[in-house]
Image (cartoon, rainbow, N blue to C red):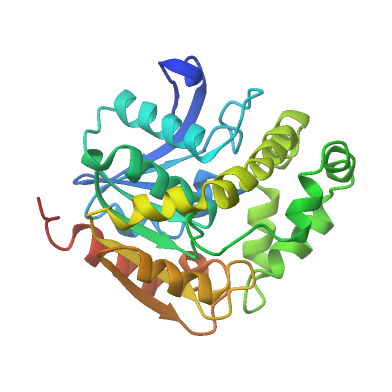
Length: 283
């Protein structure tokens, strides 16, 4: 898995790990909270037949560096910008899952000239009605979050992720929990996770109106893919998002939870390929 050192500003010197495969237009896959680049393993080979596909470990996650930092959406977007500069990608389409969708939207708002298209899978985006749930609010409480994070263990993680799938997916759950388990549950990783959750109140609540106004002006194609049975991001939030973007299209998946790109990989891969590289993006 390649690693590079980012340059510039608050991310200067930060190690970022990523996967890259294929040739063609650049497509960047951005994982969600607690995710990692290899979680796209069912999607990269298919998309790589028509695009150069990058899957990154966001700062604080996977094998990327985990420095003490304010892990806001803006921080992740600036890291993504530094990554694209480092690999020489001037324009890219972004695919974001869950919180990765919010990162992709934030990047598109701050660097619209660099983004061709957005695909948001089971995405949450600031500017709409989604707010962190009670568990996230507990973890965001100083002191309490640190204490609760020490109680985490593989069986609890497996149970939490399993609830996000519509049907039994023991093998997928085991992979999502077990990959680089020691590194992803280390003290720096726990601190980065908590810092990310603690940024939710600012990004999703306090700045909601600012994001909503900015999103309405975003002039690029947006594809939303959502499972009707998603227990993490309600379907109503996806509908609200579709109404807030100027050029959005929406595809629903029945019998699908929070991981459409895993639960219905073949269908989603086809939708993504057609949307991202099936035709040139308008200029």
